[in-house]
Length: 285
Image (cartoon, rainbow, N blue to C red; front, side, top):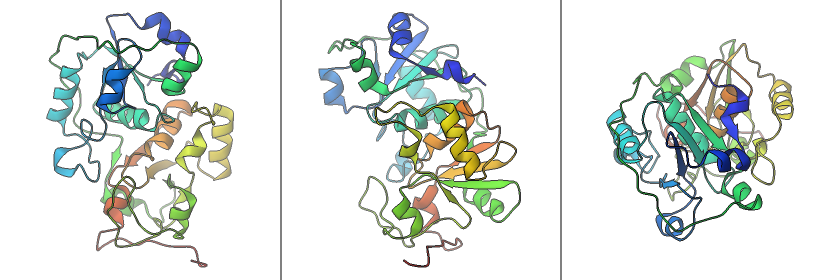
């Protein structure tokens, strides 16, 4: 695993390394027409809504299958030894999900631009409309095991067991059951509301500062320890569709060094609509 000091990079690092042939910068924060108007120089565009979702499960943001992931990386000109730098425009939640996807398929050198494109612009970084051509590669994943992915059966097996913790990354009103079961980013309404039994709530947006940079390692560690979630436990994160839960997964694994953390990418889109799952709500709801 990379150390926390290398996983997050700042605008200064990016400016110094942006022209390296072995660095591939990926913009995840813009729609295509926005990207074509202005983006960080040398960046390649990925639309998370389409490029990063399994075409057979796009509505619920299913994880890309191995062949589709290889095709995407090949189109972006990524090789096995490429340093992939990810950023978006909104607190890097899409960058965190993409980091998870890359690491799940065994890519080694991945960075996130801390604070995303707003940090680059705040530091005086230039933007361009020029789209850099890249030579396609023949990318091959190093593992299809997806060791950082949990499924419904994994969550069910963890319920009530010592040594397991479940983190709900949704806003508190969804966790409590106060708000209904609408799925993030869609018009679909879940059949059930509430949370996975025993889950602890740490809203994904509370992992970042107002400027979109990650909170300090000390602050993040203290918050998790206050919840009783410690590195000697196995952790599963979830949210609506597996996007918001990528932020606690990234923080726990890459910044805090927790060794056993998986993301339940089916999340509430699956759990709250299955016949064999239980949800709990606060008593006053």
